[in-house]
Each structure stands twice: as C-alpha cells, then as structure tokens.
Image (tube, rainbow, N blue to C red; front, top):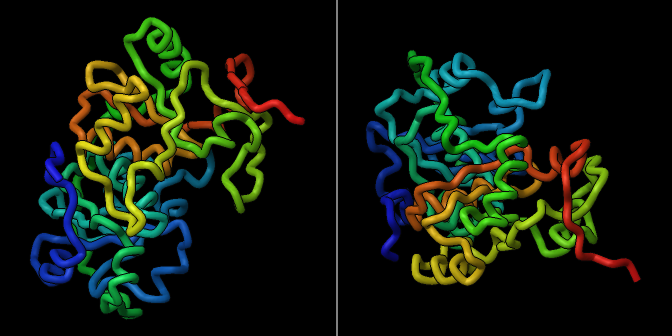
Length: 286
C-alpha cells in the first residue's frame, strides 16, 4: 500500500507470530467485555478508561502510572506492542497514540482489527495468559503530538491564514450541530453542537474499507488533499473524546507521513462546553 511507515501487520502475520519473543499482543475495545468472549491466544487486555484515565480529574495517568501499567502488561522498552480492537481499530489507534505520547514508540496495529479476525473465523480463546511483570522505566511524555485547548484556539488563526488545518473526524450530523453525539450513543453533557471554526469535516470512517482495513496511501492522500489538508501545514485532529481522532492521527502521521499533526484529546466534550470558545454551526432546524 506504499505507506510511509511500517506500522501495520496483517491477520496472517499475527497468527504466524503469536508465540514470538519480544512481542506483546494487546486488545483494546470500546466494549470492554468483548475480550472475555474470545481474544487472540496470548493477548492481554487494556481497559482504556480504567488504565489510561486518571480516576479523579479529566486527565491521563502520569508517567509513573504508565510505567506501572506497562510493567503489569509484561512490556519492556524493547517489546514490540501489537494492538488490535473493535470499531475498526478506533481504540487500538487510541492506545497507539497514548503509548507514543508516553514514549513507547515500538508498536504496530493489526490491519482490520477484531472485525477482520472474527470475519475470517480466526481461532480465539477465553484463556487469560499468565504474564510475568517487568520493571518498565518511567519515561517522558511527547507533548509534540498532543494539542491543548488554548493551542487549538490559537490555531484557528493559522487555519484562516492558510498555514494550518483542523480536521473534525466526527459524523456530518455532529459536525453540523444537528446532534451532539454519535448515532445510538447517549448524550454526554455537551451543551453546544457544531464544530471549531475553520475545521474540515473528514469522518474517520472514510479512511477504512468495509472489512475494517485501511485504504491505500493514494486513496487517503487524495481524500485529505481534496479538503486542503496537506503535509506542509500544521494539523490538529479532534472528535468527541479523541478516540476517533487518534485513528485519523494514525492515518495522517504513520500511514501518510505528515510531519506536523497533533491530537486534541479534549475534543468536543471540552470545546462544546468551554466558556468563551467560538463555534460554527451549519444545521438549521426546520
């Protein structure tokens, strides 16, 4: 597919390398009960809320807690983490971005994720592997891949000047302000609908095929360039809580090689409730 980086593995490759030393397969699902119904032999589970989020404030766990998590998963800095999950790898991409943010860059994603594994009738198991804990060193966060609210606000002017781009990866109805949540999802307390001024709506789902695998590099490049999202610009991606935008961040940075892309993890749950933050809304109720 001529991707910029070697960050994907096929389902065939995954099954051929399940028992390799130096690899750790990790399943990350939105539905945290899926793992218990069957997973790749030897794969361990990550609960994105319990394992990634601080239990008290709206923030990620710190570097010390991240090191403890990796130690519990049996990961060392030299371990290649192989991620996969449901929702066409939304949550695997979220974990990939989160691992990168915390300094663990040695990771890949199974192309097609759990969807493709199940469709192919691959062997799954309910056995939970015995993991030997490791001593994972406390690292340093890579703030260059994370965007904060004030940076996003300043970025609006860069977009207007043609120096930057903002990618809203949510559905068209969320982008327009018709709804404040995805279809079949509960309302999450966001007071306003719409999008950040100047943002382009490029839904994450346009980046994948029906089987959950990523589209070719040529298809992806053409899709983004048609919306003015080019590699010479500084780009911020956002969605609702950053899971879908992590998927698009992965596409832009790892598959296409765009050098200046950040993920706004506060996303619409922060921006839509923020006092003094501008929005655009194109939906007009009949």
